[in-house]
Length: 539
Ligand code: PEP
Ligand code: MG
Image (tube, rainbow, N blue to C red; front, side, top):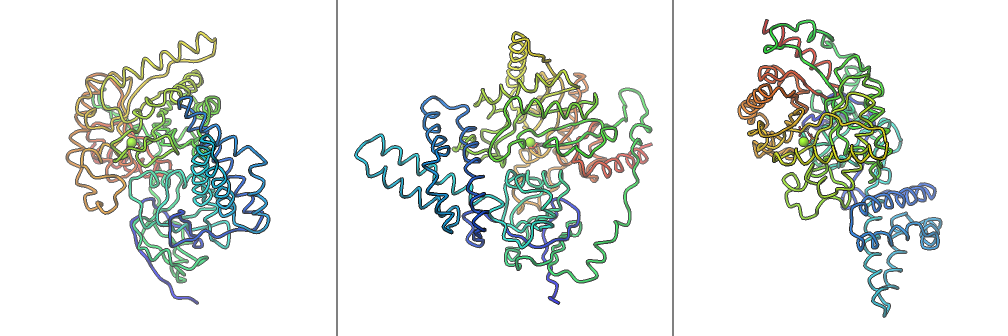
């Protein structure tokens, strides 16, 4: 029996998982080399990534001018041209890995075009270099091309880092847990892992990449450890049910409600979701609705759903909610949520650059398509729509008039639609400090970003974890102020940042006057328990 080795890190999503080590890395990782599969697997990988590249290019073309659309159009046409692709598949058939076959073929074509006398053909060589790189990146970063595991289920993924969209592209059924050398406690990978109940440990030592492939691993995020070849005792403990589940005072927060209207003690608990699949197995009667639907995570394989697909998704969530409020946030790309080609590359500091509503303004077609889908879904339930990263009051007025315009346009076309409630996230200090100037139907506090902007501690920097609680006095003072402005204006205010999912912050949030919390699905019961304790303590 091999001896147990234990590594430690910081838990970004709790829980325990037992599985086997599997590696995954990016193309520029010198530690993990892409393991080629069988001929059939390589062929499938090539075909799948041709589709992904086409979708990503189509998304990129969405809001470009005519010249740019033509350039992108040529690349899409090549990806649809059997004659162009045939030699690549032939190379794979002869035993080459998909990426090498692609690279070899493209290099040949690039040489041919570059050697031409004709300026037009020479320019095509440039486009081919672009296409070559795009496909290589996709193939080499494709999660399924990077697995070096010996089995396909119960995998504990070990990696340097992973992006939110890559995490989403991994089959949830295969993944039991995740350990990263980088990562952070509040970035979007952590948010997604918590939402999906995937235990995640970040800040692990680089040595985790040298664990033998296929080794049994117990990833215990409740105790911040990764045990390789775990000893018998650990495995026995793992199989025991948790000793003390928090009581389930499902209606405590309602039953205990008392006091005058101004001292309202009823606390709503809503869900944070990033796709309709998250609520599939959740009974809506257990919560008060959806407080945050992060629509940017609807992207799959580099492609956003079109207006009709979005309409169906939004409607399905409204159907599920049976009249309870559903707050859908418009796309919040930027920061660590990158969509190929759509983010302005000149963002030196992505979290302070073109992200959230700022990015939506730059892509009016994309944004308007989303607003249309939302307006069409609105008659099917109690919909509220908010925009992220609001900095100045004019953005809110602009958003409202854009939405009214969309509703008018659909109305003229006799398309069924409605104007939902329109609100904003409070994530930027300038908005939090002057909330009275923002004309919104509701406010939602995005504490993840608000904390990083107020404290100047980036949410993706684990090394600054020692400042983890340094923000508390300033943020609570700010939140109290926001709640008081909102109640003076009679505008509902809630919180959907991660602190609302953490029991230790609940008493302070409630003491600030917040009465609506939107939390990760996996945290509902502990949050409810914390609310119950707060009620008992303060009565
Ligand atoms: C937040 O900033 O608190 C928030 C909920 O938005 P996101 O985490 O998606 O940036
Ligand atoms: Mg945010």
